[in-house]
Length: 387
Image 1 (cartoon, one colour):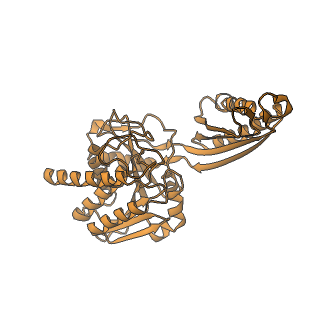
Image 2 (tube, helix red, strand yellow):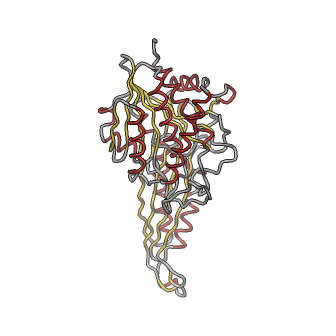
């Protein structure tokens, strides 16, 4: 068995590095999807359907006579980040890289599909969902809109994400909120630009924009209860000015994170009040666009206990932990949980791993088998075989 696992790990490492070398942005994962579909057919799955939600792939594996079905999900897309590494398998696609480890997530699920197809050990149906465009927050919705639940029904769903800073062989999750909602905003300030030497001849917007960026920080510090979790970050300030010309247009962009709809609503309301007030004080106009891209990720409490039990058969029991607190990052796996119960969990990518979304990030291949074995364990636990 050890030799077989070593062989599988070597094979999975090769898959992962192939995927890493050819990253693709959301809804453009044609090569990745084709790779995944070819592997699933090679493993002998009962059905492999491509093009679900654009570039998504769903594999189906049935064993026994059980009528229950569960789903396992991995994301496939990469980010528009230029990779800064000297790996032999570094990105061949300029300006795009797997900076979040989706290459590893895809590989872990492929490894689980191979093990379950060869070994069985469960009674029922497993759906292997390979999702596009997670980074956009649009891929899960696209698959759902394409009839995922009707075409490939399942009762529960499970997903994994690597986590830098956690040691290899660590498993963490928690009941209830584990990842936040993400709202995006754009505030456009409109005034009258002009010569930098004569600001009094117009109503330039840069001073107003700088004031607004500062004023927005009072939403979390002064408008939310200290016991509520909220984050508001301005990430871009763009104007049409130049070295000697004051701008007449400024765009302020960013995002907000929260765990409850009422907190999101408060942030939006206060943002509109502050934007309009700041604009009025500077004699310019403000237009606010506020959208909700990700919903909070809420794990099912009962299934979290099932996930912990399965994890203890794979990881050292001392390395199976309840996550201390929710993360303010977001994940569109949450969209599936609006329809069926499930669990999202984290596996360690190493204490010395570069952060997610960093140009030097790389998924740690030593963690591949842990993820695959967890997928297999939860399937066998939730779809027990009488054999």
